[in-house]
Image (cartoon, rainbow, N blue to C red; front, side):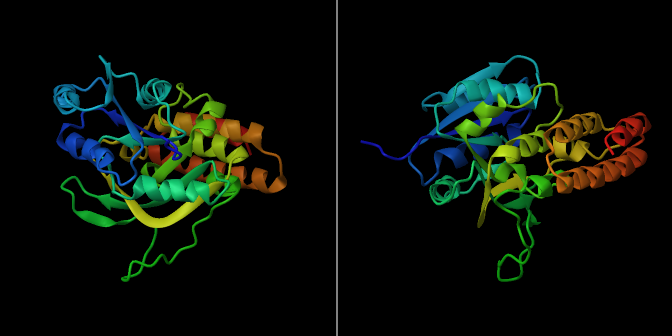
Length: 280
């Protein structure tokens, strides 16, 4: 009888035709044997839907076809509703899980009390050329920076330091949060804040995921002029104010707001500055 937990991978696709097959294959090629894959297409118009149909034809893969885009947060929640796994991975269809990613994630959970485990990530350009790891390493591939883990709520208020594709999440964490907040334009910051309030994070010192940096991606759009994502950042900062308990946490929020106001000036989102000021 299987004593190992099932892991569910929700693969989100939106016009990822060029990289879709490799991303799906990376899930099917995991060394860990108990994996279910749910592919969610969020209104692709580049032929991705047809590619997904061809790939899943003779495989045990669930597929959710969303006719027109509803956004990453809502699309993920639809996929999560179909999952049965004890652990969840949110995988963009242009990223790749290396073969040991899930096995090492399971080991990390079994050896800690964490609700979220995260690993190092190799960044790639659009052509697959390696741009370097997310965390700093020397020429011998040895980590040379301190990566916070455990109770990292304060660190996550102050700065983004986790690469989202490197995360693996206990099911209970997502259920406690009622999934991603569908009113937001991006999910990472909000998820980190709300989950780390009550759950520990564990870091695995291995490069286990490849993340492709594409022009026009959500992360790239975040720092564009008049970026709509700053409104989401403001909403998360407002949540932080409600969640904070200590003076240290309040000071961290103050530093975050000062940083975000500088970003508002750079990006021309001047109307948001008074709202950040209210949080100081």
